[in-house]
Length: 327
Ligand code: ASP
Image (cartoon, rainbow, N blue to C red; front, side, top):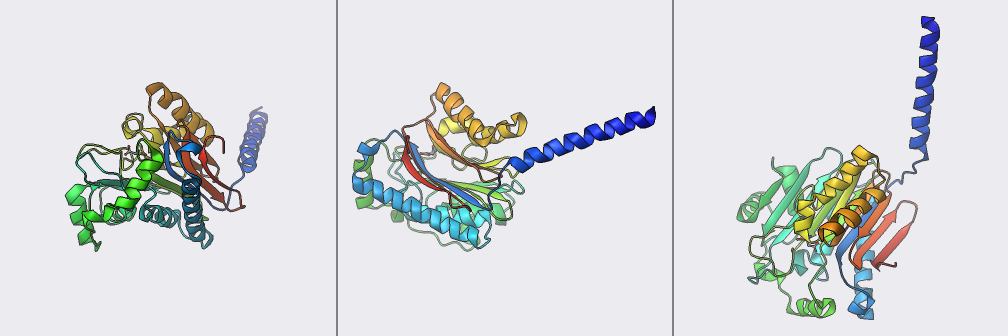
């Protein structure tokens, strides 16, 4: 009797495991994948000239190529995120690094963060004024300090100790690019940048960098350097980078909420991102969007504005670059 019971139990367990395995096997994993955003906002084709659209698409295309090269050579997802975001920070089209927006007081205060999905280590800098590439600074906080977030003068002092050279705050002012972009975007300058990468070792990393919101008050910090709000990565679920009205993304812990919906409710990355961006944030009045990769390299690009600069590539040659809703 006992033996029969044990035999039945064994058969049930074996069939459950086989079912679970077949569920896992039907999920197609890419060898590597990369997803990028360059900010979300209420813009359409008419907001940009033909030339403006081409410039943004060319920049996203170059960013994809830069990141893909790193991943093809078996570089880490952290290296890919750093390479992509530093490139976008150096490009004045975007509201990060060189092209950072101006505060109400006419200064530039930059925020950035990075997170590793393998061990949940993370680093961030907030309100820095003399760092050319805040994403590199965020990595230094992650790798070379016992802290997760460092702000303002203290962050800059730490980075100098670590060997980083500061730039003059004037570096972030370019009359020409500033005026050109103001004209192009009519209302507010957008263009926060973010990137999520999955490397060949199966590790996710996510990063975000921004000048914040135009006309922000001195000392205002947005969601971009806040782990769990603007950036999150966990190999068990997904990597997320956000863009939009930061105060809402902080209050709704958007990036972590997407990961949590996958972890606790078994939602797909697309369903989780939709739930947060199209339901929760819309109800709250929070505008913006997210780019995510799940741990198989499957993307989600969800935004509740009319546009979001975005791009995706994977190891099988799927490729997408878009700006508007219908792309
Ligand atoms: N989320 C950024 C902030 O609030 C701005 C943006 O993504 O456009 O600082």
